[in-house]
Image (cartoon, rainbow, N blue to C red; front, side):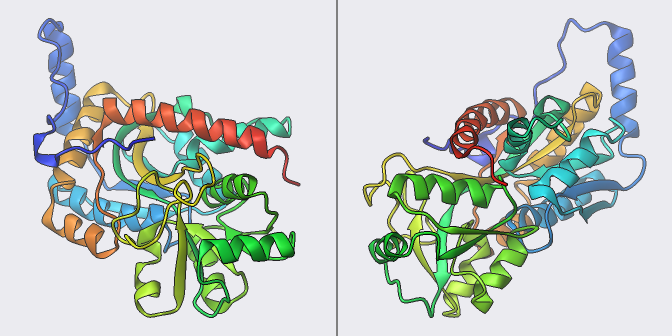
Length: 334
């Protein structure tokens, strides 16, 4: 999948209200927009601090806070590979005061629940896309002390010791789990899955040597690679990651169409009134041009990839279809 790239300054602010809209509706819409937000906004992250969603949410919240002129508070609600936080926002009042900074696992969790015959904690139809903020190719990281210097050595070791090399994830069917299982299937290897509540704890386990491999976003790895504590062996992108241009993609290495992106995007409950959604879209668009936000993203090694709601909705649908197919291939994980 070729990720769309947009010039932030060239994007339209938001779709204008229809000129033919009834005057009374337009007045009501303007009133709703003028009154929003009437109190602090909560931006929920379904993962612990330190992971991709959290690293995206904090600079976005700070920038939106400046243009909304109201506090935007990041609230971590980890668990279930993001399911707990996502379910919380799905059930929240649809008034724009509770938002979700989600990862691609948003589409995966409901599909995984179907495998077990369980009712999902939410459905993707309960969310309205506000905007994409970044989309990074996933990277395969190992401790710097590990014996594998490249992807071929890692694969050879995994084939020699099936099910013996432990890798971490953000939880069963989370982004990090699905990415690694896609690679394992293509490489014909079997690894030992060790789930955590999020990428932050998984990285801590990788740094301590409790696990030996992790699929995660470039932004969560940069400082640890720079300090010599971690090594990156492969990239799930169709093209090499700008933060790690020396690291080959799995496609280059001959592992078929192994492609996976960890993206972060902002959502609101689907019944949020249209004028409030427009206000949130405008706020996010302004935030994505904020100098402090751009600096924070670049420092983290995760450059912005902004898409407004219509383009984000199309991107989300395409990505979700690919991930749902991957979950169906993985099957039930007890």
